[in-house]
Each structure stands twice: as structure tokens, then as C-alpha cells.
Amino acid sequence: MKRLKQLSPGINAYTVSFDACLLDRLRKVFDTYLRQGLSDIKNAHLLSGNNNVNVEINYQALQFHILSYGNAPLLWISNNNIRTYNIFKSFLRSLDILDDIKQLVDYKKELRMYCGFFVVGNKMDRETWHVDYYNGANAYTLITPLFELDELHGNLIYKNESSTVKKYRYKMNEAVIFGDNFHHATEPYEQTEKLRVMLSLTVGTDKIKYWNILKNTIGDQSNFMILPCGHQKGTCHCLDKC
Ligand SMILES: [Fe+2]
Ligand SMILES: [Zn+2]
View 1 (tube, rainbow, N blue to C red):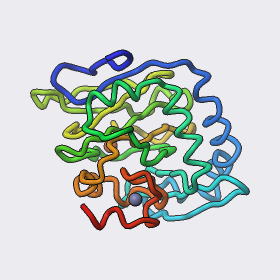
View 2 (cartoon, helix red, strand yellow; view 1 turned 90 degrees about the vertical axis):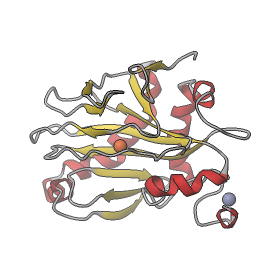
View 3 (tube, helix red, strand yellow; view 1 turned 135 degrees about the vertical axis):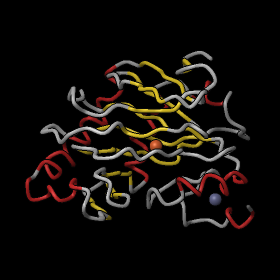
């Protein structure tokens, strides 16, 4: 491993530190297109967690899909066209971690980035324990703060090898990357003035046979997604073969 450091022995999670300027473009995108709308008092209900949010928003070139899960107060804002997707992908490439991730997954030619997200909230009232991938998915999630966090903002809680609950404290210019069987949740926190804005992306195998495992957790996270075959979800018949 050239860049990734294992978070703790025996668990499928790693960290990597990177140069702050690599996030400049995505910060600018968030500030230009999303921050004002999300901070507007008229839109406070979006972050309240009592509404199911499912909206697509289009600017000239950039498009986003805003989704909440159940009644958890967290918005998943995904790239909703190729141009927006490519901004997230450039960030992933700039991290220089793909060779390391290749050592962790079964792939044919190259890794795919499936989707990029801004994950936005201002409170968390519960521990929603879950895994991002089931056994053998051959994929990873990357998360890093997009902006400096408030000291009250929740960190990442996870279970180590002996199922003890541990805390990973998010740091600026450091990403956490985790794969199948990594049990985790956002640490609950009281409502803050400041938005908690995380960057998240999913990356993994280009072998379509793993879609059957992948789809259970990432299949419906976003409208726009690049599948392991390299095509945009909904535009090909490659999945018929798996
Ligand atoms: Fe997760
Ligand atoms: Zn395809």
C-alpha cells in the first residue's frame, strides 16, 4: 500500500491524507450551487428529517439529485449528469489511491467510480448502524469533510474486529475509505447553525458479476450512476448477464 493506512487491524477501513487544494473545485461547486438554497430558512424542512426528499435540480451544466432516506435528517446530493460526475471523479483521481484500492478488490481492467455525493445535515438524532456493502461487493466508500466541521458535528462511529464501538474523528484533508462488512453510523449530534457537509463517493470493481451484491446497497442511492460495466445505469443491457 502506497497511500492508504489501515484504520485499525483486521477491519476493512483505511485513511489517506491529501493536499487541501484538491477539494477546491468541489467546494466551489457546493458554494456556488447548493449552499444558499440549503441555508435558506424556507428550505429548513429539507434538513429536518421529517420529509422524504427526492428532487432533481438542474443548473446550466451541472445537475444534482437530492435524496433523503426514511426520516433521517441527512441529504444525499448526488451528481445527476456526466459533467457533474466528472468533477467528483477528478477529485478521486487526484488522490492517487486507485492502485491501492486495486489491491483490495477483484477487477478486470480498471476501477469504476459509481457516484459522487455531497452529504449534508445539521443534526443527527439517532445511530443508524449499517454496512455500505455486503460481503464480496468489491467496492469502497470514501468520505471526507468538504468544509471544516463544527466541533459539535458527529464523527464516524464503527465497530472494530471485536465488535467494540470506536470513533473515527473526521479531519480536514483526510479521507476515510471503507468496504464490505464495515459496520458504522454517524455519531448523533445536536442541531448546529453550521451545515455539516461531507464529500462521499463510491468506487470499486468493473466486473458486472458483482452487481448482484452491490445493488443491494448502492443500486438506488442515486438516479445517475456509472455501473461496473462503465455505462450509465439504465442505458445498457449488461446487467441482463449477471
Ligand atoms: Fe454508510
Ligand atoms: Zn453496461
